[in-house]
Image 1 (cartoon, rainbow, N blue to C red):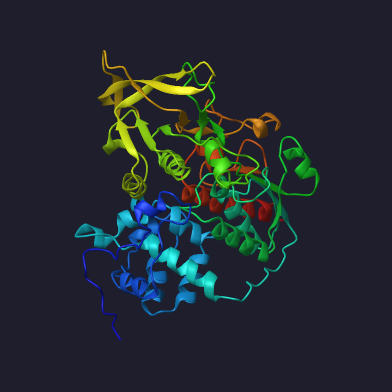
Image 2: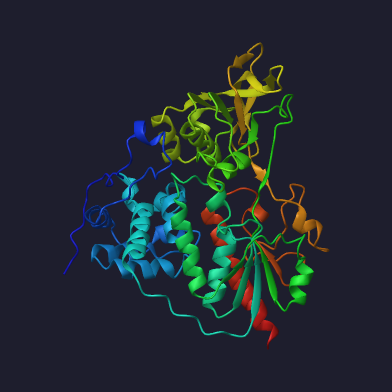
Length: 467
């Protein structure tokens, strides 16, 4: 029987918390599709035989196939199709920038809105979590061992794919909780930590071992991991070293990196009254930057009780690199956007605390090497923002610890590990790397794609040595 397609040019809206309520709580903003919404949205998919959406997915999920299962109301079947390619479907359904990847290739997007692929992935993953009680089967061991450094999205993906192939896999994580940026960087209101933990539990169920509080490069070196019997090592340690602007006043009390600010809130629950690592409760906050991390920091500051939160970005609204949905949510919650502006000094009071930020106005000049128009200072345009907290969200770079303790490991001038490209092989035999440790700060799904590619390369490498 032919499926009756839903030809509505607009996708089914995602239910959300009311902005006036959610801006003061850390509960998830997007509430997810109901069963009926998911089926109706899935019927908008044309099930294209060429699968342009799948080719644009960094982990190559068979998107039309899983959506067709939703159409036929086989939600568990839909989940199993996604799980063949993704180790973290409930995570990706929430934080993956689908609008720039799979949804950007959707045929329905040519004469309307693309199918809500991410929303459907989230629904399917949540449905599985809430209804499935069966444990996944344990893979048959193949007698080989691999070590993963970093329990973020890239490391967890590599670990899951290798475990499914029968490898004995151990993940070494520096922090006390696994998840990497998923637990310390992305706020609870975008990605509930119970979701992350469930995905990690799924990996443990197929045999992945996770050792926390293990700082590789300090407690153990990569050479020592090989001495322990691991035949290959994957470095997925991310990019957690924050960048600053090196302007006067950055050492004042009340200046944070977004990395520290979000880690205190997300990982250490600094917003709770009995927190052992309390964070500054601010009145007026400025967040410098325009990416997703800047949006996360600004929206978190609002939830921490700030009266006013301003995002200061040196380009215009059209150039903001953050996801459109995150920008819209921030605007709905009352975040102020001061674009075409850049700080030149942080001002302090006699107590050494932030009391203001001197900025200059910018104009857009010629395009830079990335194709974006370069911001240029507008003459005689200084102004002062009245603030008591400043959060720097202008990017991060990889921590140098691993590369400084691994002889023969090559890095570029930005401190990123150099690899051969697709498979992630480094300058050291048997050592692979991917995700933010190689690219610098990027998206969760790109890090996962690198983890998948490295798992394939590691399997090929170890298998070839046995011949």
